[in-house]
Amino acid sequence: MKQIGLFGGTFDPVHYGHLAVGKAAIARFAFDILYFIPAAVPPHKTERLITPFSHRVAMLRLALKDEPRFVVSEIEGQRNGPSYTIDTLSQFRQELGPGADFFFIIGLDAFGDITTWNRYRKLLAATSFVVIDRPTHHRRTVAQVVAEDLPDYREAGTGVWRNTAGMHIYALEMNPVAVSSSLVRERLRRRMDVQGMVPQVVVEYLRSNGLPLGEEVKG
Ligand code: ATP
Image 1 (tube, rainbow, N blue to C red):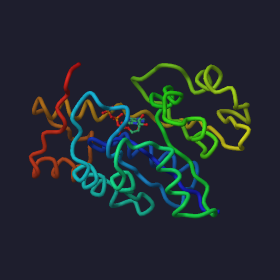
Image 2: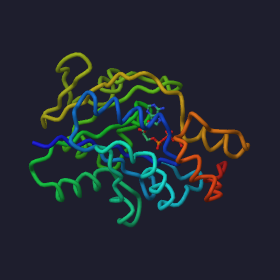
Image 3: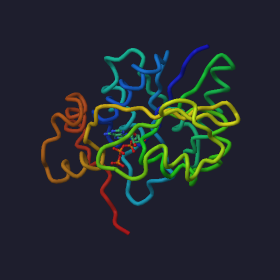
């Protein structure tokens, strides 16, 4: 059985927090491949302009080039309409066949809203989740989200829950990296440097493409 990690996000732009998540997840789960999947039209981020998909993909490719098991997937750029994870997962299942186990990687901030996701019950029955705690976003713990919102799961070990479909939720601890794409965009807008927050190749890409990363649009 191949172990496949799926890491969805906006990646506007990719930063060291994302890379640290990928490394922590691959260290624990020994994925054969970990796909980074930029959303073409993120359903949860409609309040601002998003940098064009092709630029976000290009920056991801640069940032991931030294990690052979990290692969950029353009699967969500090939569909029209909002990028729903359940559709992405179905497409991966179809393409990779029955010999693959999937683990969807997600930050705790996003996981706390899982019950607002399109067809979330179907999604939870179709894939395991790896949930990563995230500094500066201290809301509910994974255990609280499971206890309050996901009655179909039972505890199956420390930081592990299992549902009736046999899918798991794993809480993954990692050393916190206090970076977010919003912080990077904000610093770029103020013409501050973002060294140490995003890989140097991404800094250079931003510079040479003169990218005004999606301006925040209020309201
Ligand atoms: P923004 O600041 O624009 O909301 P972001 O930094 O959260 O962006 P996304 O592309 O939305 O980046 O994140 C993709 C996934 O990575 C999400 O599940 C998010 O929770 C997680 N993530 C992002 N940054 C970190 C970090 N520093 N530590 C842990 N998880 C992170």
